[in-house]
Each structure stands twice: as structure tokens, then as C-alpha cells.
Length: 290
Image 1 (tube, rainbow, N blue to C red):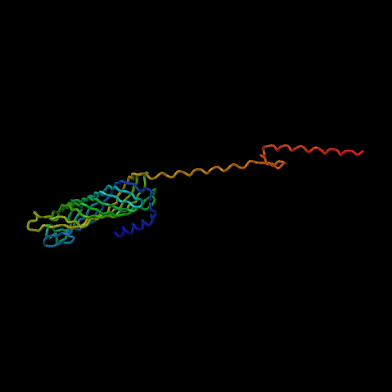
Image 2: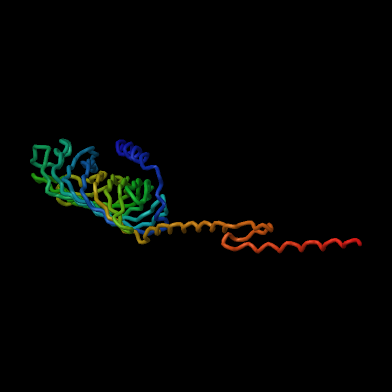
């Protein structure tokens, strides 16, 4: 848990630019991948007392799949999730105290298991989107909801501590996802999930098969990590790029060439100046004196 929170904080710092390109876009998605459940520690109680870590169950790798539907508010997303998890059980270790009470003729504390566990969950997630929408984008968040967990704990050799039952309870999870757009509407990515339930109470068991032994209940939490691939379809395409700016207007034409005529008038260089006026007539001759 602590390592996950530190890693999430470091990666979040590297993608500190919020993405707003799909504001107001509803979306749907699917996730599927490997499930790695943690060892489940069952506490066994009966009318005589309680045994901590009475049955410790180990799991094989399983599958985790879900479908999500949500709304992108820009930097924040809210989504609903329906999930399914399944894995087979590999082995179990039974505490000597519990084995003395319900183990019958068994002497070894390690048992092979041929059972399985199955989880059906409904969650509401809130996520923060960091990074450019047209490139690699990081989402981190958390979810709360409910889960129905079923255990079929078959043990070899057989003991009375092998049980089958289901229980529902509160669940929460942490999420981290890296994704990138494939097209204008479709994103592909990888997702990490840490999932945990509140305490679950299975039982009572051994009510009719234990003879003089009291019935018992099994109490435990389910925890698992998942590594999945994801596909998301966004119903609204990203906005088209803005149109290119219009070309600049052409420069004004240069002023026409002119010339100044002898009479001081200014005319186009291609025109001809007006002819100068004729000279004035000479003055009349002076009269002769006789």
C-alpha cells in the first residue's frame, strides 16, 4: 500500500498538466487481466472461543474483468463499475489449535486445496486525469461500493474446516491507469487495481456434520491486486482543430508616377504637359514727330 501511494505520487508529478479536451463526454469501457489475490487469513470462532489465523488460504493467479460507464468532467471523471474476479485455491495452512478441534485424523498442518473464490462487485469510482489528451494520459483515483465473495474451500486430506459459503460486504479500491488515444473516440491503456473488502463473516458451518463439536464461523478479508488492459469508447469526438487564419490582405498599390509641367501642374508621367501659351505680341511702334 505504501509503495503504491509513493509510486502514484511520483508519477503524478511527471504528468502535472491537466487534460480538458473531452469535457462533457460520456464513455464506456472494459478492463481484463491478471488477478493476484493475497493470502486470506480466516479467524475461526465457535461457542468455545476464537482461533486467530486458524485457516490461511493461498490462491493461484486468476482473472479480473469489469465494465465501466462514466462521465468525463474534464480533469475529473466519475464512473460506475461492475466487476468479476475468479481464482482457484492452491493450498491452505491450518493452525494446530483449530486442527486439534476439527481436523479429525489429520496430522500435517498444510493441505492441498481444490476449491476456488469468486467476487462480484459494484463500485463507484472518482478519478483525476493528468497529462495531454492527445498523448499518454495518467489517471489516479479510488472507489467504494459492495462485493459478494464466495469461497469454496475444499481440502485434501478432508477436514471439517473445509467450507463453502458466500458473504456480501463493503469494498474499496485504489486505481491507476495509463492510456493513449487510438482514434478520436477510442483509448487503449493499462490499469492497476488494489481491491479490499471489509471483514466478511462466513457460516455457521458444521451444524449437522460435526456431531458433538460446536458449529463454527469463519471471518476474513479479501484482498487482491490486478494488472489489466483497458479499452475505452468516448461518445463525443474531440473538437476539430481551429481553421487556419485568413491570409493577410495584399499591400496597397504604389502611387502612380507623376511629372511636374513647366506651368507648375502635376500630371501622370504617361501624360503630356499642355503646350505653353504663345508669347505676347510686341508693343506698337512709337509715333514719329514731324
